[in-house]
Picture 1 (cartoon, rainbow, N blue to C red):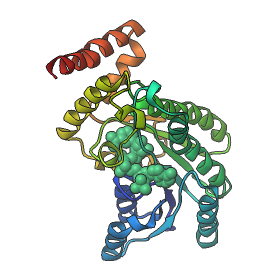
Picture 2: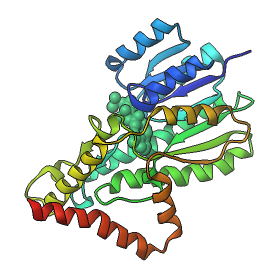
Picture 3: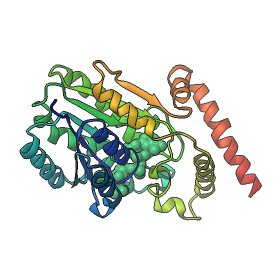
Length: 289
Ligand SMILES: NC(=O)c1ccc[n+]([C@@H]2O[C@H](COP(=O)([O-])OP(=O)(O)OC[C@H]3O[C@@H](n4cnc5c(N)ncnc54)[C@H](OP(=O)(O)O)[C@@H]3O)[C@@H](O)[C@H]2O)c1
């Protein structure tokens, strides 16, 4: 049987890396892309060791030229695209007051406009598939909010709204748009790839102690995280093979509960929880300093 063609962004680590290997092992032809090919060593070794049908290509989701080159190569080699997985992303922490305009816009450029760039460029090739799908990796942060994450929240909320609308438009042409909304999983997005607003690290910022306390709280949570990123990878496989997969897919520790509270309880309950649970802990941490 003809292998389905899958393009994944952000394959240097995390969900992208793991899904490239897993989906290739389960019978897909993968174009695994990353913005820095110097980070391709581990993936390249695994592909060679297991003789997997994966091509690694350079692609930065904010760079239209690199996107165009990749899609041209896929068109020449495969003639169509069955699945686009918009996975590339990062999170920048810092209270809004401490985020520069550049830092905020860069976050939107990657997490939101990056996905738009990919969809726009890939649509002509997706139309050549008889069962095309777009999987957007959003986040629990696209359904809820956390102080100190306004740029990340905004980028993922934008991706959610865009995906809803796009789903309805592309359904007219038989293309499925699907969302994954992970809670926290131990990948580099929570460690090495976490960025901070420059001013958030400045002790003169009026938010400095709050930012530090939030960060310490995140670190404590992340150190004890037991969630398995392969859950998200298996979910990707399900979404691109099931006949009628769900549009929204929330996974991970606490994610469904947080989304439920945000969506169904009155807003004053959300505010109370944020103040008591999050800021309450921060106040405690500050008093202990
Ligand atoms: N892990 C979680 O807890 C979690 C929860 C909710 C949502 N997510 C989402 O899941 C997605 C994957 O993250 P992950 O958890 O697998 O973290 P990760 O290990 O940090 O992977 C992120 C990937 O995105 C790439 N990337 C960043 N900016 C890019 C750009 N401009 N162009 C192309 N690639 C770019 C990174 O490349 P470099 O190595 O070059 O930086 C890396 O390959 C992200 O969209 C993230 O927001 C993760």
